[in-house]
Length: 88
Image 1: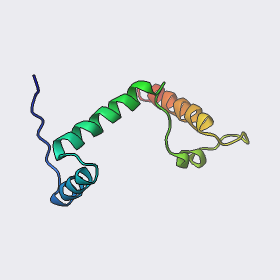
Image 2: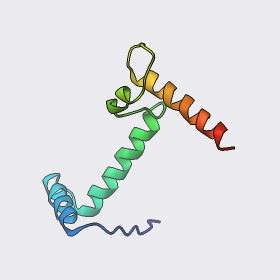
Image 3: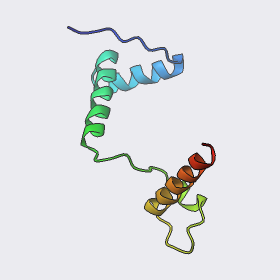
Image 4: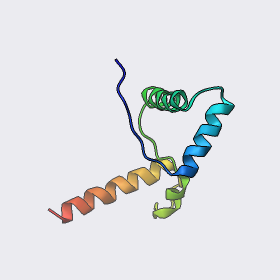
């Protein structure tokens, strides 16, 4: 049995969504359902959360090591752990 989902969005966004649904040959409900299904499929198939933004690479001093997302994540994790210890 289907359940009802109510979402409040700006009128401009609703018009754009409606236009996109028409382009795809769908009704608005089908379009929204399709977007949710696609997102859930992507989330299920991805192995783990990743840092999406390359902007963080330059946000930390990495001690002369190469600037990569992995190194930025390591430094961020260390800083978070240090901050947690200070606030105990």
